[in-house]
Length: 315
Image (cartoon, rainbow, N blue to C red):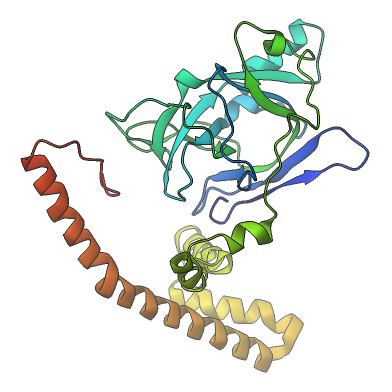
């Protein structure tokens, strides 16, 4: 997750921790994220707990405070854009670990009452607080240049590029037990929830989503995002026109595939991008604009009846 930014969570052979690493790019992105697959015995019961704890260590650099770190919770089985999210101070947790004489693992505590409903980095005002009584369906983390705020707000002096965090343990804590002390909570096979495999999770998707995913991949492919980002950089930072940028791409590819191959490759890319733009505009006309109109009518009627209305995607 993260637009043209990339990251992955991987097991580390012969170690008791995982590695979450990647490259965060600010052109057309600005965040990296990861999340659990659906739990087999969903949802997780957290009714007697006070928050989420994380045992971690930033090993790539010493600039934890130059990034925004966020914990994400989903309290339903939907795949919508709205989730509960809380920022946490990784630098403070690392400093506290050093004071204790432990300069490796930092324990981060993220209270449930610090989570807020968001859409992307933007806070949804007047939303209900986090309620875990119905269970937790998904846990995730995000590293971002954006602060949680009503309007899009960027962190000053954000450090883009490579990052690597070792994650030893994630769990729930209770203020009245010892899980708030690093090293006291020990995970066991009995308490570690099983998740579906990626293939099992894909098979459980609604039929409509399965039908729409190929179209979504065509419209929002990572390669297309990277090409748009590269075009933006060449036009804004190198003052190239679109034609000059295309000719520059042909010249770069020519060294590896020859002039004919480079022209053919570029022509194929342009053809795919044109087809993508046509399909995207058709879908907007046929589906998006009518849905927005219907949604606006429904929202207006609810307001007239005094009913609570959720913010629209554009608010």
